[in-house]
Image 1 (cartoon, rainbow, N blue to C red):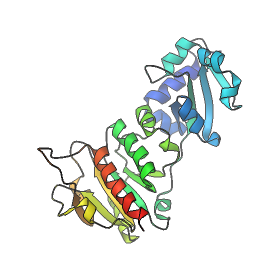
Image 2 (cartoon, rainbow, N blue to C red):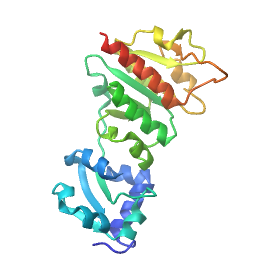
Image 3 (cartoon, helix red, strand yellow):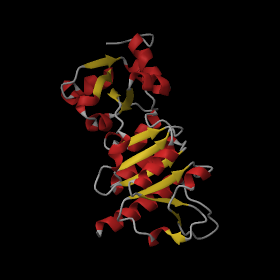
Image 4 (cartoon, rainbow, N blue to C red):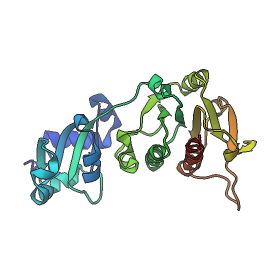
Length: 258
């Protein structure tokens, strides 16, 4: 059992929690909690750590036969990113999808994310995307790190199942999608038609932009169609994750009817 916060493994876990660079260099990220552990693909689990209290309460049976390192309770609290640790965390191998694979399905249904910065928004978008049947997500390199612990928690396990890729050139990726016959839609205030008046049963991608500034103009201009979400009252815009959910589930509704 590890009893000191000065232990080399403990220091490494803290770095993986706090530093995206450390995660990228090692090709791993951290997940916490029993649910995230139970849903993680076993072949991607590199290391498992439990608190002393968790081990005494659940024993070996809860660990699926995986080799596990036990941390003293105070050490586990030191490495955990949550205020109320559940007593189990894992180091998991990263897995991005090749960009061309995202349009290889018969009828792609994609998201294009431009400079999203809020961890909760990105995690919620991933979770919603899985629920709505999105087939892949393309993100600009300056989006918040998908492996940020707060994003991971917000995905509620969708991080394991939703294909995604980061790109250094979102313009080039968008042009590649258009060349592959994908219709690109951007929710903009100047949109001439309501979001529910378009046909998303074909190859479709929705663009979603930064929480404060929206889509960059050069990215928005690549859309085939500007759409708007009609709103009442004095509200001018919706939270990006909420707006994304509206669009995604309208597309899902239409696709169920095909």
